[in-house]
Length: 364
Ligand code: B12
Ligand code: SF4
Ligand code: SF4
Image 1 (cartoon, protein in one colour):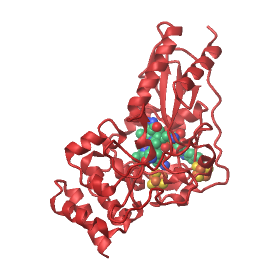
Image 2: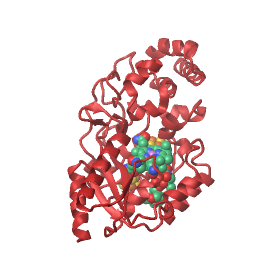
Image 3: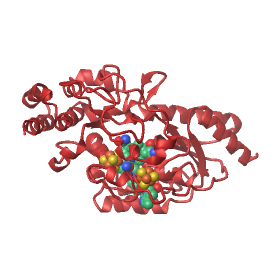
């Protein structure tokens, strides 16, 4: 078998399936990523994410014990469209409507598949399986094991070593094909495809993303204090959001894209942005959602709109809490009625508390 030729065919097939880039690396452990992951835990930067354990970091950076049959790793990047043209002035592109402030959902949460809202885990898993099927048709008995974000694999480190992009100072992987607007996955294979050359880091003297982070979460180039990151606070964190961080969170209701939007490389390479679109989330996540609507959803309404999308992870109460904070930051006193209702009667204590905070902030 001509493994080099097979690798190129595999790459072409990955692109045909919609991936932006594909590369191959060896089974060698990822020692620097392991050191960084353990340091992040040791220094408390991952506090609040109980699932991010030292055991996970160790397993994620050396597959050999768990998958002794594996011989190479295929790294894959899936492109998505940003919510706002990188480099455009901050603020809402959508027309503001007094009394109905619009917030922001991170662009990856607005991914669709065949015109329907979709969770990227499902989309990527399906495409990885299609790629594995393609390979099986050429290499009988080949084994493949896929990892899609929540798998025990360190996606950025693998992608960087497989040559499909480099980690920017904002920590996200930047590809030639779609800037940093890519989601990552990988597959272990039982065949030894020749490794690609690792990517070289290419930020140069630029540091634009560091001051663009409103909460100071990029504590050093490539080093994130997750406890301060709006993505952590709005998606992973349970219970009340620490008060000193709330005014810094702007109107983000789910995730945050500011460090990516500040990146000049994205200005050149990112895919065309999403249309600002509807304010209502009736048909799933939108980039500029109506915050009052999202604050006021019942559990059933939340499930109808967001089950099967990335927003599901925040839960109804998490999203409502985020929207209360965002409304407090919106400066729009038209939100007071909805906030008073949430503060008096939301079933979740963290939502009631956040609504009370927002009322006080708007009244100040
Ligand atoms: C935990 C986690 C989070 C945490 C912590 C983030 C973090 N930076 O560690 C929180 C909840 C905050 C988070 C936020 C986001 N996340 Co997240 N997250 C993860 C997860 C599950 C593990 C990441 C991890 O191990 N971090 C620990 C550190 C050590 O690893 P790392 O960031 O991968 O580190 C690399 C770089 O920092 C770089 N590096 C280290 N030092 C230095 C120094 C210099 C100078 C440079 C240039 C680089 C550099 O090398 C490291 C190893 O290669 C991965 C999925 C996975 N299984 O890997 C997704 C993942 C990293 N997240 C992803 C996304 C999309 C996001 C958000 C953009 C979501 C959003 N829009 O709201 C933000 C971005 C925040 C940011 N600036 O990083 C994508 C990133 C895609 C990409 N293009 O890189 C991933 C890969 C999920 C996926 N499968 O697509 N995330
Ligand atoms: S995602 Fe937002 S909060 Fe997190 S590091 Fe980037 S700019 Fe900062
Ligand atoms: S903004 Fe500048 S420093 Fe930050 S990732 Fe982009 S190129 Fe690198």
